View 1 (tube, helix red, strand yellow):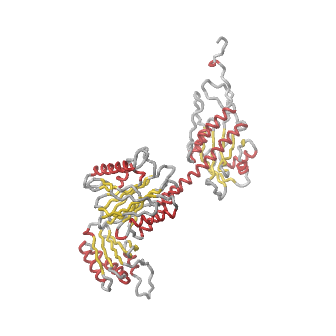
View 2 (tube, rainbow, N blue to C red):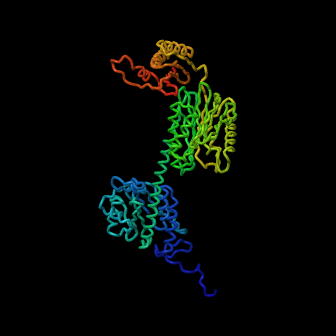
View 3 (tube, rainbow, N blue to C red):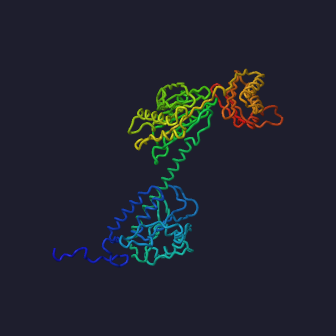
Length: 597
């Protein structure tokens, strides 16, 4: 309309920071309460997005520089208290982060993005550590909780203590700096110093409210981040202690395992696996799954795993182990449900005995590349009560690989459990084809290939995976005898051991083996009422096992100079590479190992 003024020709409003006109298209400073509210809302949302300590502190710095301040220094307590912990020692603040506007300005687009200065530049800004002395000016300002301008006498006296008197740091004059204590739920956990340069207008009274909001949201976020970090640490410790840190080295079998939590925020759950050496060079392979993937599930899993280890030490049959686990789950509570698969592999007989309690069936990958889902009675889950478990004995040929897993590997929202098991079988067969019919795939690589079958929507639950490669022990590497419990048994045991070593070309071990076999067999026949068993196994080491029907385990003790006996186990302990004794349901087995050559 006539007489109207074109907005493009209107005089530019002066910039409150410099008093100079603001060019069209440039950002304008916060002028009204509405501007401050919008800024606080955007800044707090940015701070709230941080999950860990560094992200929250960086969010505070990036939200305030350059919109609210030209520079910011963030100090945090060292160390940061967690929850209701009572800090010990003096209050020490550490400079956590500093951001400031770079020297170069974008004259057309306003301020350039704030950049993190190099550590060498930060050294001239403030002290790295500051100990807050009780009753000092800084302690009084922090105890006051509310942000203050640094032109007040109290704040002016507190700054040299915070920044370091020996530093070459000059504060701008007037109300160009705000010191804001960071108070968490229980106590002050740090401080933030907001600075404006001389080319910008000083802070106003309402800016104290803005600083208070930023400090409050940042402090509460830091509190939550510290608590989250503690929970993550506890979860990692639970996973480390409740799952085997290293799998044992067992004769005639190689092992590999994997564990994946359901999500990064739930690092432990109810899935577990285990490999437990048993008498007679056997090994128990266990995998289980407690309902849920919470801390409670992890605690129940730990109790069931400990129970399974104890029962395995008693050398109970697999079905009996599951029966006692079922009773233990009922003692823990009526709603403590779990599935479990317990298998015992014997490398001498090349057989495996399996019992199942509602768990997905294992898959056996044969040396030729065929993957077979083993037919194992499913059974009821642990915790149901009043049910029997059935064990089956199957062939475990040398070169075959047994895969035990939890349902998180094969079941998800996108597929049912049997579809997943079939996909697993096909994946194993395809992987075996890559190495040919005469060479099984490497065990660690096989585990990785199995986990690669998981798609983006397949991670609904924890995953525990245990793979066992059956090498077995050839019959030619085993010598086995029965000895009547009589005085002549030790001499006969020495002769039999000498002949076996000669047949294997291990005559250099004859003296040590004869001495140790004689001592162990003498202890066995002294109390045995049934024939004593003697077995020699030739693998990467020479292993000797002596079994009898007496359940009491021998103990190593120091014999006195006047004692006529009591030195047998002392000799075993000194000469053998390893030795041990294990109680059986029918007695015990004492074993020792010697290095070959």
